[in-house]
Image (cartoon, rainbow, N blue to C red; front, side, top):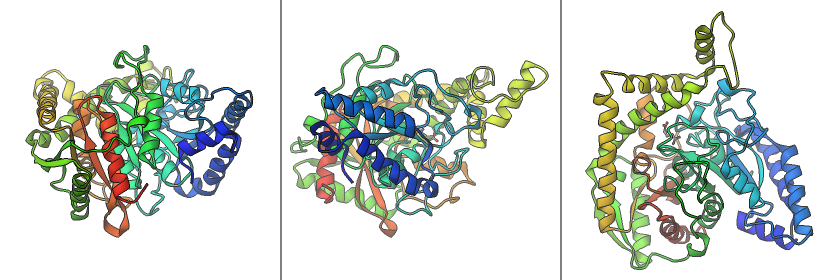
Length: 474
Ligand code: GLN
């Protein structure tokens, strides 16, 4: 399977065509989608028209862009004009957005061909894609196991060779966790680096769109395309996209990296072993790796499960049967909204709305939401202190390798604990990525997490590239 970089080079040079690359992608989807349930919607017609346009531009000698003719899968909480967008929820069934997300516009402007919308946990709430109203996605590496979540479909699209790259969203780990479980590179960018315009909001102060890829270079390439200021997102950083691909081979010589005790403790032995082996590989490449402890990280899971549901309860108030998707008719407006929301939302979404509404209600606000915001500030300060001593941090992405279906669905806490290592950076707004390194139980992939201060993506990619090479993946 070709990388995105190779596809784009071949399409630009005429060695291949956007149409040929798309047909290859569509044929893998046709062979594997039924068993894996990766795509909720494949836009063959729109994609064929887009690929034909790319080829016509190449024929005219135009510069088509960095992703010329590259098929890309996008998570179904990203809007693409006229294409069904469900967030894996019955409440949005039938809705076709009248506009495209900025990241989708940027993909198209760079010559990419969007092939379809991928499955997720409903409204991105979950860690296994089992919360989708349209059935779970299966892990292509072992279909008896989950692909992770909530961007499980986008991870599985790349892991099954349906596409070389895809987009997900990460509020508490939803790109890095499925990347780890599917053996991919997944990146949660600095908050504000990538526009959220056209991403259906879950928890607005935490959500970021980011890339999945098989290689570090492809992930850097995709992030470079989607990053940069957008006037339509008021939280967007007022600066252009950073140069990332050009720096992936910068190496780690002289870099100081902190191995965070709290981001390894509690992980399975095979996962912890992979993190320590990654530390050794970074040392061998010239980095200084030191042990670090950030005790505040122990508080972040609780804070996240107050802040994220609080924001979600507010964001999801708009799904009331009036403007979007599904409506269940009733005698008066209040009963209509109640019936619509009762029928439209799944159990986990309802749980989050109740948790969040409770945490924000008068009398409990200070005790819950207010406390959580204080923990968030402590977390930001703790990371800032750590980055005063080291250039980047290292830990596990997930406590275990991919688990089996149904293993954690009876106990919400067991599911929430999957994100114990990924949530801290979302609270801080800093970037982090997951890169496959070594293997764990049953030969399944393990993800190693690299974290850095705001806007340090280039450094994280360079360190990840060292691990990719040391692991024999490049
Ligand atoms: N698993 C976490 C949750 O359920 C994170 C989800 C995400 O990042 N979208 O909230």
